[in-house]
Length: 251
Image 1 (tube, rainbow, N blue to C red):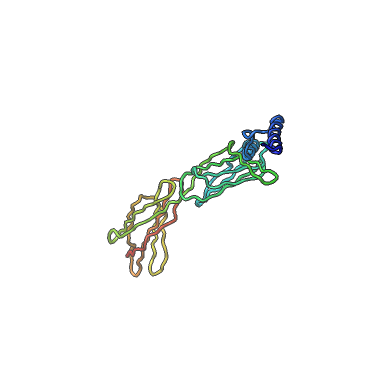
Image 2 (tube, rainbow, N blue to C red; image 1 turned 90 degrees about the vertical axis):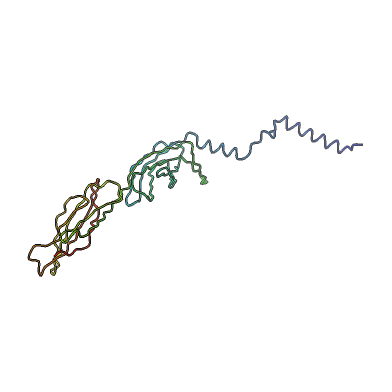
């Protein structure tokens, strides 16, 4: 025999279910996970936000260090911005700035000379009163520029005695960002025993040059040494540091 308590419990459960259904209670399929409402909130924060203005004021490099700056402005509703900086397609750094307009700055080191590509990207952000930060990656803006890291060439010199009265010198240059346009030569004659130097003027010539190695009469008791100096000019007009040969005795 079923007890009255059991009948009362079963009936109560049924009635409770009927009441929930009649009152519009939410079924299991209608329950949304917590993260879904958060995602909806983040999407709503980014709705209509965009980067209104982004520019590169300048970008250049010196001694393998590149630096640049520019301006940004955001649409109404954004109160911060995320900036990303790319060199030759590689992300180098990122910075967040508060406010809906301002100036961005970038600096980095280079490892190679020649032409380089720079790109800056901006993403609108919303930072709430609790410090929660939302970056809106759907609406970025970008600007690009190119710059050159100039590399100085290096000059080298090889001189030897061609015969008793003549020297021959071979010049070369390497590295640099531009082709080589000119070889400049100068002689440095040092008189002995006075030790005074007599320099010739700089003269443009080829990469191989012959120099006389003798002094006018009377030689005794005076004789001297001869050293050859070289500098190279590239097509941009940059001149290398002066290099010099060893000193050759010329009687």
